Length: 330
Image (cartoon, rainbow, N blue to C red):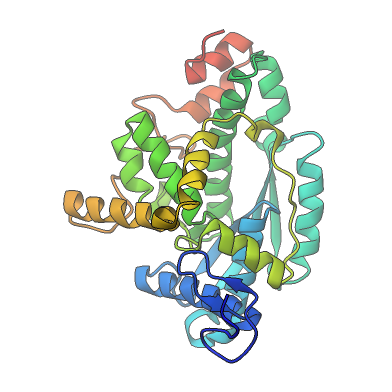
């Protein structure tokens, strides 16, 4: 490592993940923040006087996102000073996990002048995620994580969208970083889902009823998120969701991790995003969110064909009915 920071004479504390540049602590933090600012401005993710819901879980990605957006709001008052942020969290009802994460969120919220809204699966859908998975009866090691994550994804998306609308916010910002987005792209390639591939390729996507999902950390690598949290002393809940172990998403993640260790492909996540965005521009001629989603008139969730999985999940009672929502075999 060089004896001095690339931008100043200070002692470097790390090498930037995708460039290899030596940076001191203040210059590293500012470099990450400016990358987020550039993404927001380039794609118009956040505009003056908007009300934006920040989807938070207590984990490092969403916690770092809030820290950076707050820092940029203070640094660029003309761009973000009139923006109104609210923190939006989901309580899925996962025993031994979500309670600790919500406690961490309460501590995080005290750092910022933003209100915290918590939406509960049990209050909105009558059941916790634990109860849904138990009723479904998928106790096989390989099946249970896939089923839990699928149910959770359906209900979380619906809860976040409706929570955003109820809070009169126009957009939902999530903490998905470059590695997360590259994983999603690879996952959709594996599944052969062209529609989702196009929608997931950029830093924003259209959602139901006029709300849009935005990803301010779209160009920030996982390593930079971890190092930012450490050097900025951002508190976060570091325990992984128990249902995530063995989930399908872990396979693309392992592949990206292995490729990033090779000098020639250390920036594989950013390359994946760039290549997919280029393909999208060629295919559609636009950098917009992607193909428009057909939504359920009853709950505003995206339709899968003519089916609304969220409404079906609300009505399902028995294990067979729950499995039928995902077409999961018993």
